[in-house]
Amino acid sequence: MTPEQLKASILQYAIQGKLVEQRAEEGTGEELYQQIQAEKQRLIQEKKIKKEKPLAEISEDEIPFDIPENWKWCRLSSLTYNWGQKTPDKTFCYIDVGSINNISHTLNIENTVVEAKDASSRAKKIVQKGDVIFATIRPYLKNICIIDRDFPYEPIVSTAFAVMHCPKGLLNKYLYYYLLSPTFMRFANASDKSKGVAYPAIGEKDFFNGLIALPPLAEQKRIVAKIEELLPLVDRYAVAYEKLEQFNAKFPEDMKKSILQYAIQGKLVEQRPEEGTGEELYQQIQTEKQRLIKEGKIKKEKPLPEIAEDEIPFDIPENWKWVQLGDLASINGGFAFKSTNYTTEGVRVIRISDFNETGFVNDKIVRYPYDDSLSQYVLDVKNILLCMTGGTVGKSLFITKLDEKMVVNQRVATIKVESVLPEYVYQVILAPITQKVIQDSKNSTNDNISMDTIKSFLIPLPPLAEQKRIVAKLEEILPLCERLK
Image (cartoon, rainbow, N blue to C red):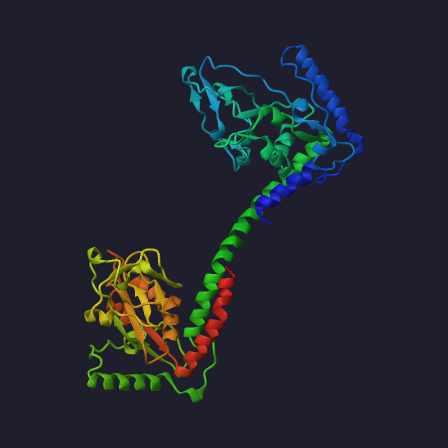
């Protein structure tokens, strides 16, 4: 249950007579209603308020819920009154819809002081301290409050408000909480009472025809006291709820990171001596690379610097070996295409905006005439793409399928792994340790990472069979993290 739902439940229980007990000695809503009518008649005779038209009887189908026997259903206009309207003739404090914080339901601290000559055509309704005001324009926004302070000049409220002054038998706080209740808000926002399209509103006549459940005065006081005892607890619950929501939002991603970290530390599957060692696999890779260099199939590259002891980020199993990505893969930058030369025909060009971790993005495909000079930039299944520049530096994609021939531009690195399992290398790139290296290595001027940085990524190398078991386990577990989102 959200904090808002909990607050709504408390208010709903309160107005249904379920929040505090009823006490026979406190009288009845009917008796209180008669006292209020006598008070209103006195004020009419004294010409302090205007006489109202007789109200329609409350029909059975209007009653939204059952109330205690000693309560009474009443129309709002039978229990409240207002002070009428005036055209401002001197400096005044103006209260419009924007003067109310509709979260805390309080008046803004700063007064809006207006000269009479600058008065808005809506600035007409007289209001006094203690009155309850309810914005009838877009009532779902809940611009409701009690006028709880004095003003340096006469306060005037907008005609967008219904103004309610409470006689002695009706607590303004009880009325205020009743107006905020789910039942009354549903009434105020009902489509059959809404007028206008751009600014839907409930008409004032419809508003004051709304029902209010009237308990004895003493019970009103106990209801208000109980609500105000509970609402601070709701606020505390809201803080805890927000923390829980943040935790829940982060949990799947944090869990994924933890699983990847466990995987590359050799903690996700067991080690098996019969599968050999990372050192043996590394030597096989180097032997194969030397053969390909001699046959002229690949170019000889500069030796990578030795891995220093203080570069090693964590311990790995004894049969694993720390190596660098450049020891395992061919890493190429893309071709320096000119955007002015892009066409609607030819080979598709993959830019940093054309992929994410789930696949290729097909919103704005660009192409380029293909010839053999672009052959070294052609993508293949199981290649890894890595964004080298911009705000999405480090974004990557493991290519599982290609629907057509594609080439990459110079802002995207292509990592081609053949000697080990490319799926395993990709998971190492996704792991927190590699992502931290990427973010720490960014050029502060333009967020670039260099080809040398990519080649120097540290890879904890297990035997090939263990790589397969790690990837299989990740493919089993990681989808569960996605389901938690």
